[in-house]
Length: 419
Image (cartoon, rainbow, N blue to C red; front, top):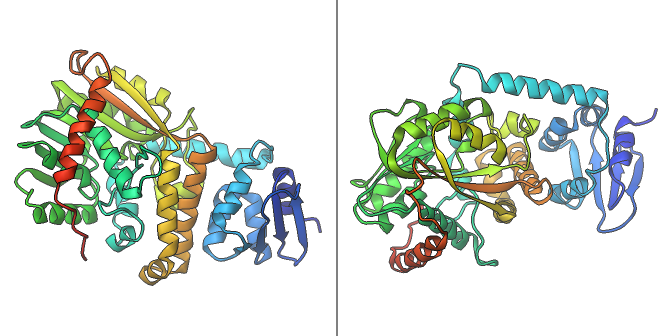
């Protein structure tokens, strides 16, 4: 009986070298023989049929379950081989129908009046803090770093990211700052220490992040100037902020809620205020999230294009003052994270199990593929209510970054988080 999966693989892999062992034991060489060979084995017929039927979801699931096995090379190298061949068409009517169904379902869910924000955040960010300690930098920055200049360490690149954002925010001492999606507190603490008298409020929906953030701020003597709250941005009222920053949170808003998000920003931002939005972005709308990521990693998430972001921003009465794209920097960041994570595989397996380790390895490798081959990037959008809130040139960014480097040289070292 002919293998459906083998037929699909032959259509897809035209260049490179793939050794494929089917569930039947048959072995086939696929591709033009160039490059390093990647060898995979399918453990059973059910796994083979599942991958052939729904590769977007089932490839990752079968890898998690140890039924899609890499015998030469690793999952990153396999996905890289696939991505370099994605101009070859393998979609049939069944796959197209499955994709359209997923798009329709995610579009409906994104516009549902039921608020699942806290559940969606808890699914990912309320995992054990020890997990994130396995692969993040010393400041626990779980967003794209800024490798400028090239070749710097992950920690240095994360500092460069915070510096770049702070410069664009045009922060002044004594101002009130809101961070929407405050993570483990690193950005808020950086701003508070860089600018005397700053009053910073960070909001999160993750109880685990909240505990860590408050503990870190207390240890650095910042509790009187930096407060972290368990708060949904939708329900924050009665306050005005001079500056608003959001880093790596907009991806969780959901395409159906962009209007609500920017209307709330408009409500909270002072008339002379400035906001900096830092988010993953894609070159054009996709209408749905990758099925594996949606199910296992970031339920309810969606990566927008710039073109999907600016219309609701403008309708909320806000002005786009500056847009910068950072291509490839997240690919570099994810490479560091994946290398760190794989190097501590034993710790990850002890913390959860082998299946969880493979799930996260697949997530990190697949995400890097997105930035290297699918043209994903980071967008930084500077937002204001009036055109005079920011300078009429970009020289101030470099000037402010230079001053922030002086602050960093005198800043007390970050203490390692303990559990």
